Amino acid sequence: MENKTGKYLKYAVGEIILVVLGILIALQLNNWNELRKNEDEFKAVLQQIYTVVDQDSEKLILVRHQLSEQIEIIDSIVEHPEGIDKELLPHLLFYLDLDPSDLNSEISYLLGYLKFNPQNKNQSGLNKSLFSYGNFINNTSVSNKKVITSLLEKSNIPYPSVEFTYSAVNDFQNMDLGFFSETDIDNAYELLKNPLFQNALKSVKSIKSTYLIFIDNFIALTNTNKALIQDYYPTVKLLYSDIGIVGDATQYKDWKTNIPLTLKNESEAIWEGYLTLTDGLVKFREGENWKFNWGGNTFPKGNTYFNGDNIEVKRGNYHIILNLNNKTYQFVKQK
Image (cartoon, rainbow, N blue to C red; front, side):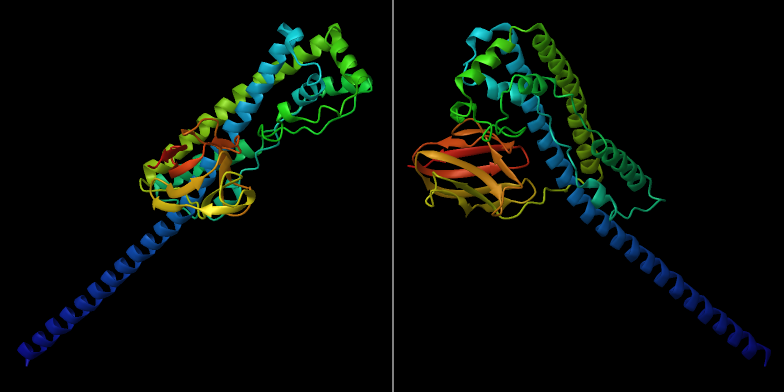
């Protein structure tokens, strides 16, 4: 009887151990699955953030280009006023007083969806860095006292249509030069001799130069955070869709209709296509709007610039290669 009882006890204990082990294994598997699910969700949002930080970098590079252009114009006006086209001068002077708009990065919105594990040091550290970046870049703005504009308006010179944006809008060589009267132009040129106006130019240059330093720091910060994301997620990629080419050199001869390119390398964001072009201008863009577009200033290959100049192309059949990861394009002529 005792032997039977002992056997039953051993059997029962064994069954209990098996049940407990089964429960523990199930809990561990469930925990692993939950961690993997959280990791997948974390990476999905992180990939969107990576694209936004890359876009921020491109926007900052554009701002840097425009600030540098303004500083160069000031230097030309101060050092060689006689070399400035008098008809163009009022446009340039108003342009110098313009500031870049706030960047308004989308990263703060996306960070609200980045659910990190506080016990995961890598996730916590990355989230902290991205959060600091978002606060920094969305809470910095620049403005000046518009001293140049004020002096121009005191001379009764009317305000033209100029914007702080890519040079296709501020195409000074094709401005409406009839906007300003001869009196306006003469008054603007006379202002260059005014010590007060000369001081205003120096003041604006100082402000632009200081902001240029901030922009360089911002660009370095975007590169740092992109590198941190790549360290955590080595296979991260840019999220763009429906990339095409548009312009008067395409078969549609307009700036409305995209000719789609094909995504050939998703990890490197390389888009390609074969097109017949005429002499004219083109740009690359995402979808049928202009929120994300890229231009360049060399042909048949060069670096892309967000909101950059139209690319002047030559007639021919081309294999077009756009690398959004490396910010380059090529027009390879076909025989």
